[in-house]
Image (tube, rainbow, N blue to C red; front, top):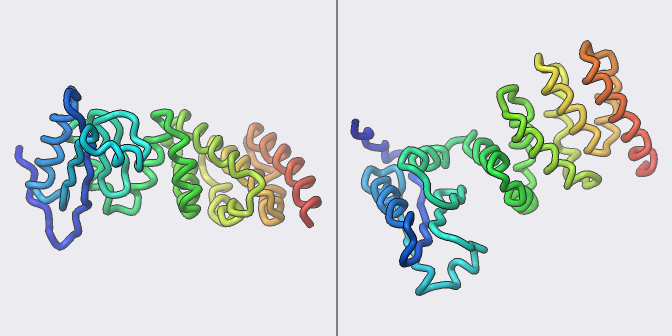
Length: 225
């Protein structure tokens, strides 16, 4: 079945493709992205042969091709037509970046998550969204926590306290335990107050996480007061 034409009242993302001669997968990516341009899912496609313009790959720290960027999303290697269309459609949706960060964590590209968050701290809220979803895979949850731990002690984490606080009443004990640990990483008095209200959580693992968080924060908060 042919995809329905895109509503042109909605801005389509632009795309960039880096390829090279002899690349076995580059032709497939070029064809796929070209199809998305024809149907209007992608607005414009720029194609760069890195053999002729190696500085393009250097500027983007690209080490292998095919490499594509669709809107804000960087895609490494071969992707199917469905995958390319998926990310093109997600580029204009609020939940798109949350899904993308989850994909990076699931594919062992956590360093890219950290780099993006360093450049745009508001993306930390997307990591909270992943923690708050009980369907988030364990590997992604571990990646989220590891990323937050890289920011431990930095004031930027304090902005997450309100959204993390809301999740302490989540139905899933896994979510509650994770957000309580995340609260401890913020190093703030507000987080300490929230954790103290969670001491009577019905789940033993959550209570243990809360106690450890309070112990950590008690020293952290007092040292910064």
